[in-house]
Length: 247
Image (tube, rainbow, N blue to C red; front, side, top):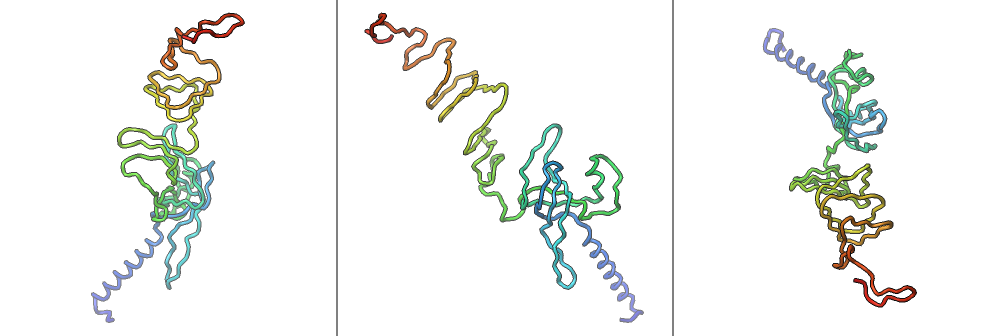
Protein backbone atom coordinates (compact mmCIF):
# COMPACT_ATOMS: atom_id res chain seq x y z
CA UNK A 1 0.00 0.00 0.00
CA UNK A 2 1.48 3.33 -1.06
CA UNK A 3 1.74 6.09 1.55
CA UNK A 4 0.91 8.46 -1.27
CA UNK A 5 -2.59 6.96 -1.57
CA UNK A 6 -4.78 9.20 0.67
CA UNK A 7 -7.85 6.97 0.28
CA UNK A 8 -5.93 3.98 1.65
CA UNK A 9 -4.78 5.98 4.66
CA UNK A 10 -8.33 7.19 5.39
CA UNK A 11 -9.69 3.67 5.10
CA UNK A 12 -7.10 2.31 7.51
CA UNK A 13 -7.79 5.08 10.00
CA UNK A 14 -11.57 4.41 9.88
CA UNK A 15 -10.94 0.73 10.43
CA UNK A 16 -8.80 1.46 13.48
CA UNK A 17 -11.48 3.75 14.91
CA UNK A 18 -14.15 1.10 14.27
CA UNK A 19 -12.07 -1.60 15.97
CA UNK A 20 -11.40 0.68 18.94
CA UNK A 21 -15.11 1.48 19.34
CA UNK A 22 -16.07 -2.18 19.04
CA UNK A 23 -13.52 -3.22 21.65
CA UNK A 24 -14.73 -0.49 24.02
CA UNK A 25 -18.36 -1.50 23.56
CA UNK A 26 -17.47 -5.04 24.63
CA UNK A 27 -17.05 -3.65 28.14
CA UNK A 28 -20.22 -1.54 28.11
CA UNK A 29 -22.75 -3.89 29.71
CA UNK A 30 -26.46 -3.16 29.39
CA UNK A 31 -28.66 -6.18 30.09
CA UNK A 32 -28.41 -9.98 30.05
CA UNK A 33 -30.55 -12.94 31.06
CA UNK A 34 -29.32 -14.79 34.13
CA UNK A 35 -30.07 -17.23 36.94
CA UNK A 36 -30.40 -16.81 40.68
CA UNK A 37 -27.61 -18.72 42.46
CA UNK A 38 -28.60 -17.74 46.00
CA UNK A 39 -30.87 -15.16 47.63
CA UNK A 40 -30.70 -13.44 51.01
CA UNK A 41 -34.30 -12.73 52.08
CA UNK A 42 -33.19 -10.29 54.79
CA UNK A 43 -31.14 -7.97 52.56
CA UNK A 44 -32.90 -8.87 49.26
CA UNK A 45 -29.45 -9.24 47.67
CA UNK A 46 -28.62 -12.17 45.44
CA UNK A 47 -25.74 -13.98 43.83
CA UNK A 48 -26.47 -14.39 40.12
CA UNK A 49 -24.97 -16.11 37.12
CA UNK A 50 -25.21 -14.39 33.71
CA UNK A 51 -26.64 -16.90 31.23
CA UNK A 52 -24.77 -15.69 28.11
CA UNK A 53 -21.12 -16.71 27.76
CA UNK A 54 -18.43 -14.44 26.28
CA UNK A 55 -16.75 -15.05 22.92
CA UNK A 56 -13.06 -14.19 22.86
CA UNK A 57 -10.39 -14.03 20.18
CA UNK A 58 -9.60 -17.43 18.75
CA UNK A 59 -13.17 -18.68 19.27
CA UNK A 60 -12.57 -19.13 22.99
CA UNK A 61 -15.74 -19.28 25.08
CA UNK A 62 -15.79 -18.44 28.79
CA UNK A 63 -18.49 -18.02 31.44
CA UNK A 64 -18.94 -14.62 33.00
CA UNK A 65 -18.07 -14.92 36.71
CA UNK A 66 -20.92 -15.02 39.23
CA UNK A 67 -22.00 -11.57 40.41
CA UNK A 68 -22.51 -10.98 44.14
CA UNK A 69 -24.53 -8.51 46.24
CA UNK A 70 -26.96 -7.92 43.40
CA UNK A 71 -30.13 -6.01 44.41
CA UNK A 72 -33.27 -7.92 43.43
CA UNK A 73 -35.96 -5.69 41.92
CA UNK A 74 -39.30 -6.12 43.74
CA UNK A 75 -42.48 -4.07 43.48
CA UNK A 76 -42.55 -1.72 46.49
CA UNK A 77 -44.16 1.68 47.08
CA UNK A 78 -45.36 3.51 50.17
CA UNK A 79 -46.21 1.02 52.91
CA UNK A 80 -46.79 -1.89 50.52
CA UNK A 81 -44.74 -4.47 48.68
CA UNK A 82 -45.15 -7.70 46.72
CA UNK A 83 -42.76 -10.47 47.74
CA UNK A 84 -41.79 -13.59 45.82
CA UNK A 85 -40.32 -16.90 47.07
CA UNK A 86 -37.08 -16.44 45.10
CA UNK A 87 -35.05 -19.65 44.89
CA UNK A 88 -31.84 -20.89 43.29
CA UNK A 89 -32.29 -21.61 39.60
CA UNK A 90 -34.96 -18.96 39.01
CA UNK A 91 -34.51 -17.04 35.79
CA UNK A 92 -33.96 -13.29 35.96
CA UNK A 93 -33.09 -10.32 33.80
CA UNK A 94 -29.86 -8.54 34.72
CA UNK A 95 -29.49 -4.76 34.28
CA UNK A 96 -26.19 -2.90 34.63
CA UNK A 97 -26.11 0.63 36.04
CA UNK A 98 -24.18 3.35 34.20
CA UNK A 99 -22.41 4.22 37.48
CA UNK A 100 -21.21 2.47 40.62
CA UNK A 101 -24.10 1.61 42.96
CA UNK A 102 -22.03 0.52 45.99
CA UNK A 103 -22.75 3.56 48.17
CA UNK A 104 -26.41 3.61 47.12
CA UNK A 105 -26.82 -0.03 48.21
CA UNK A 106 -25.30 0.71 51.61
CA UNK A 107 -27.10 4.00 52.36
CA UNK A 108 -30.13 4.20 50.04
CA UNK A 109 -29.71 7.91 49.39
CA UNK A 110 -28.11 10.35 46.95
CA UNK A 111 -24.34 10.00 47.27
CA UNK A 112 -21.11 10.32 45.35
CA UNK A 113 -20.06 7.00 43.72
CA UNK A 114 -17.00 5.41 45.25
CA UNK A 115 -15.63 4.34 41.87
CA UNK A 116 -15.47 5.87 38.37
CA UNK A 117 -16.42 2.64 36.59
CA UNK A 118 -19.31 2.75 34.08
CA UNK A 119 -21.68 0.01 32.79
CA UNK A 120 -19.77 -2.57 34.81
CA UNK A 121 -20.70 -6.12 35.81
CA UNK A 122 -20.24 -5.03 39.42
CA UNK A 123 -23.25 -2.70 39.24
CA UNK A 124 -26.01 -5.17 38.49
CA UNK A 125 -29.74 -5.37 39.30
CA UNK A 126 -31.73 -8.61 38.97
CA UNK A 127 -35.40 -8.71 37.97
CA UNK A 128 -37.01 -12.15 38.60
CA UNK A 129 -38.95 -13.20 35.50
CA UNK A 130 -39.51 -15.96 32.98
CA UNK A 131 -37.43 -15.14 29.93
CA UNK A 132 -36.73 -18.39 28.06
CA UNK A 133 -39.11 -20.68 26.18
CA UNK A 134 -38.60 -23.65 28.56
CA UNK A 135 -39.67 -21.51 31.54
CA UNK A 136 -42.71 -19.95 29.86
CA UNK A 137 -45.89 -19.98 31.99
CA UNK A 138 -48.38 -22.61 30.86
CA UNK A 139 -52.14 -21.93 30.55
CA UNK A 140 -51.42 -18.20 30.30
CA UNK A 141 -54.62 -16.14 30.50
CA UNK A 142 -55.03 -13.52 27.81
CA UNK A 143 -58.13 -11.97 29.43
CA UNK A 144 -57.74 -12.06 33.22
CA UNK A 145 -55.26 -10.81 35.82
CA UNK A 146 -53.92 -13.79 37.77
CA UNK A 147 -51.78 -14.24 40.85
CA UNK A 148 -51.04 -17.97 40.71
CA UNK A 149 -48.61 -20.80 41.15
CA UNK A 150 -47.10 -22.43 38.07
CA UNK A 151 -49.34 -25.49 38.42
CA UNK A 152 -52.38 -23.23 38.22
CA UNK A 153 -54.26 -24.93 41.06
CA UNK A 154 -53.78 -22.02 43.50
CA UNK A 155 -54.77 -18.59 42.26
CA UNK A 156 -56.50 -15.27 42.77
CA UNK A 157 -58.10 -14.19 39.51
CA UNK A 158 -59.56 -10.79 38.59
CA UNK A 159 -61.69 -11.79 35.64
CA UNK A 160 -62.56 -9.77 32.59
CA UNK A 161 -66.28 -10.02 33.50
CA UNK A 162 -65.48 -8.33 36.89
CA UNK A 163 -65.88 -11.54 38.90
CA UNK A 164 -63.08 -12.48 41.32
CA UNK A 165 -62.09 -16.12 41.87
CA UNK A 166 -59.98 -17.60 44.67
CA UNK A 167 -58.88 -21.18 44.01
CA UNK A 168 -56.93 -23.51 46.31
CA UNK A 169 -56.80 -27.30 46.85
CA UNK A 170 -56.30 -26.76 50.61
CA UNK A 171 -58.09 -23.92 52.42
CA UNK A 172 -58.50 -20.15 52.65
CA UNK A 173 -57.76 -18.55 56.04
CA UNK A 174 -59.04 -15.09 56.93
CA UNK A 175 -57.66 -13.60 60.15
CA UNK A 176 -59.36 -10.36 61.19
CA UNK A 177 -61.19 -8.89 64.20
CA UNK A 178 -64.28 -8.47 62.01
CA UNK A 179 -65.26 -9.92 58.66
CA UNK A 180 -67.91 -8.01 56.68
CA UNK A 181 -69.72 -9.55 53.75
CA UNK A 182 -71.88 -6.81 52.21
CA UNK A 183 -74.22 -8.70 49.91
CA UNK A 184 -75.68 -12.15 49.39
CA UNK A 185 -73.63 -15.15 50.55
CA UNK A 186 -73.88 -18.50 48.82
CA UNK A 187 -72.02 -21.48 50.27
CA UNK A 188 -71.72 -24.85 48.53
CA UNK A 189 -69.94 -27.58 50.48
CA UNK A 190 -69.22 -28.40 54.12
CA UNK A 191 -69.24 -25.38 56.42
CA UNK A 192 -67.59 -25.18 59.84
CA UNK A 193 -67.99 -22.15 62.08
CA UNK A 194 -65.50 -22.00 64.96
CA UNK A 195 -66.36 -18.46 66.03
CA UNK A 196 -68.79 -15.66 65.25
CA UNK A 197 -69.94 -15.09 61.67
CA UNK A 198 -72.07 -12.03 60.98
CA UNK A 199 -73.68 -11.60 57.59
CA UNK A 200 -75.86 -8.63 56.54
CA UNK A 201 -77.93 -9.82 53.61
CA UNK A 202 -79.69 -12.88 52.25
CA UNK A 203 -77.62 -16.07 52.65
CA UNK A 204 -78.13 -19.37 50.87
CA UNK A 205 -76.43 -22.46 52.29
CA UNK A 206 -76.44 -25.49 50.00
CA UNK A 207 -74.85 -27.87 52.49
CA UNK A 208 -75.24 -29.51 55.88
CA UNK A 209 -74.60 -27.15 58.78
CA UNK A 210 -73.42 -28.48 62.13
CA UNK A 211 -73.57 -26.12 65.12
CA UNK A 212 -71.89 -26.79 68.45
CA UNK A 213 -73.36 -24.24 70.86
CA UNK A 214 -76.47 -22.11 70.94
CA UNK A 215 -78.33 -21.10 67.81
CA UNK A 216 -80.27 -17.86 68.29
CA UNK A 217 -82.87 -16.47 65.91
CA UNK A 218 -83.87 -12.90 66.84
CA UNK A 219 -87.13 -12.97 64.87
CA UNK A 220 -87.99 -16.49 63.76
CA UNK A 221 -86.70 -19.50 61.88
CA UNK A 222 -88.50 -22.08 59.78
CA UNK A 223 -87.86 -25.80 59.98
CA UNK A 224 -89.59 -27.94 57.36
CA UNK A 225 -91.94 -25.01 56.85
CA UNK A 226 -92.87 -24.74 60.55
CA UNK A 227 -92.28 -21.61 62.59
CA UNK A 228 -89.88 -21.93 65.48
CA UNK A 229 -91.47 -18.94 67.26
CA UNK A 230 -94.96 -20.50 67.43
CA UNK A 231 -93.81 -24.12 67.69
CA UNK A 232 -95.10 -25.95 70.80
CA UNK A 233 -95.14 -29.51 72.11
CA UNK A 234 -98.63 -30.56 73.26
CA UNK A 235 -100.17 -33.60 74.86
CA UNK A 236 -97.39 -34.24 77.36
CA UNK A 237 -98.21 -35.01 80.99
CA UNK A 238 -95.84 -35.42 83.88
CA UNK A 239 -94.50 -38.94 84.01
CA UNK A 240 -96.38 -39.85 80.87
CA UNK A 241 -95.63 -39.97 77.21
CA UNK A 242 -96.42 -37.67 74.36
CA UNK A 243 -100.02 -38.19 73.33
CA UNK A 244 -100.18 -35.67 70.51
CA UNK A 245 -97.73 -34.58 67.79
CA UNK A 246 -95.93 -31.28 68.13
CA UNK A 247 -97.52 -28.27 66.48
